[in-house]
Length: 292
Image (cartoon, rainbow, N blue to C red):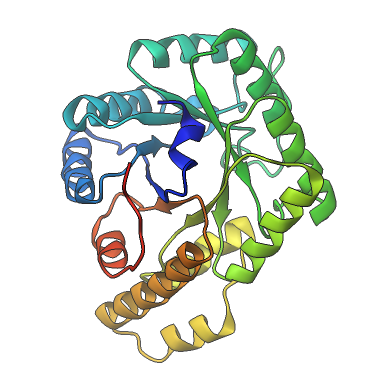
């Protein structure tokens, strides 16, 4: 199925993002997690791609295993970091051979220890250039790109960031999946701005449930996403891990419920290779129309 079709006909599409474990044992554990998530009939799974292609082989291993074992379409992330155009073409050819259906096309973050993105000689500078390459030479791949409701951490302002996104969509992206956020008002503002500037592909909210306050503070600091005061105050009331987990799941469930009730075309969960939080959130939702 074409990637954009999952978000058509008033249907709320569902996807989960995985990251490649470092060991074969970790892959086995991850596949158990995927099996638990399959009860919600996800439309596709995505798997991240390490800076400079550091997880290239493992990314494709995970994607191929998920597709083969669970018969669900898969997407591989792909970044411009540390790769020439020919190396990107090589990965795309290999991804096609391994049964990957879609690509999440990203510029990518600077490698660990570096503070700014550096263009590889013979490589690409921007994600829209990667979209253009895929669309021109690998036409069978559906393409997702990233959107930033609270602005990319390296971008000077919201309007510039929105123009960057439009370039990616105009280059041929099928769908926009957002960075994590915790205030739905930020997503609604972003989605409306996308519509006003002529971005007409589905805008899909990306959700990372808070299950540990310290952990999510680290993650949000990296991407400059804000944590609502009410959520922080709630999680700060007790240090008990199970209590924080339940409080975070409750918040995320309310957040996702509001998004679904507003008519979002789909929801993308950053599951961090765990199923419990996402399972609880989805099990308690109302109106999650999964009919084909």
